[in-house]
Amino acid sequence: MYLDLFKLKELPFRLSPDPQFLYLSKQHARAKAYMESTIWFTDGFVVITGEIGSGKTTLIESFLKEIQADVVVAQINQTQVSAVDFLQAVLVQFGFSPFKMKKAELIATLNNFLIEQHGAGRKVLLIVDEAQNLSLRVLEEIRLLSGVETTKEKVLRIILAGQPELNDKLDAPELIQLAQRIRLRFHLQTLSAPELRAYMQHRLEVAGGGDRQIFAEDTFAEIYRYTGGVPRLVNTLCDTAMMAAFASNRDVVTVGDVASAIDELQWVEYSVRQQQQAARLAADGHGNAGANPSSTATGIIGVPPPTPVADAASQHVGRLLVATDGRTVQEIPLKVGRVIVGRTTDNDVQIDSRFVSRHHCQVITTPQACVIEDLNSTNGIYVKSKRVRRHYLNDGDVVLIGKHELIYIDERLPRARAPFVETLPGMPPPAEPVGEPN
Image (cartoon, rainbow, N blue to C red; front, side):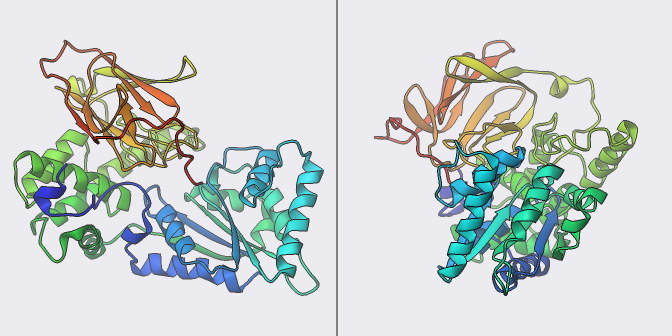
């Protein structure tokens, strides 16, 4: 990787929600203050919304890292569940094993737990991320849970975080009682151009760059033009641009490196993508509003695919099979671009397993080659029993990720390049992967 060239201690633009990299713009600071207010006020919900990649999850992780010891937290990230599944997930977070309980027993156990914690002088907080995926029935269960109270106050504090459509769902006529209990709503906007520059400099400084100018002055406007100030898109473009500079053995990222990254990612300007997205929604009559908007044909998180063109970049060059227990559970066609694999719903390929990190690895496809890279995951990726950081994929390669296998099928002519593996010496694959925190 490029760490030595740029004299950095760690990757500055990785996609995982690391709290130490959080850049507190004015609006992020305000949203965090609203979250903190839930500890002191118990008279309603706090709702935080933002577009895909706006930094909601990183904000939550930063908030949780600083939370007081007397606060008991349940954090729910898997939200495409039934009411019973949701109640079970909450109880699991509180240390119970509720899988044989019926619904009435689940509710009674939760109510008793909340009253006990209040009696012991502890505060209880429920945080639901990706809340836009919750059904109306589950949201109604959350409202009922919020009603548990002593003679003086309610005992459960609740934060709901999600994409903008969460607000539409909360305003549904069926949820009028829940809507009346919302104390604060805040929407995270994208970064402004000055904030984008400060955001990049902050992440580079945390990664060990100090006050060095790693990105040339004329790159910031170009990065803003193609990312619109969406933090996750900024991370993706900056990381790819640094790889381009690394390939040319340059320790300063130039506007040419940014242009190369944009070409590799097959991006168009952010404003154009927004117009294309609006046009597609209008053409579909919003019929796809419930679909996962982070999964796109280009394999780039949060980026609507550009208008198809009849060139090599639009053709399938390979396939990625996801297998477990000897059977294929997913098949992903690969085009030129990037595909992110991880546990949460904002990935291009979601593997719902506790052995898989939020953003576990990425597959980068070019017209000449296909590369898989670890994204600093807990359990890593393995090829032929060796843990690898980065590996050029050959037809038939099997990559172990947690308890799943990624099988690469190359639909092009065989490449002359020999397999290249950056291994971590002395690290055989673990007998049992480590479960990721929720």
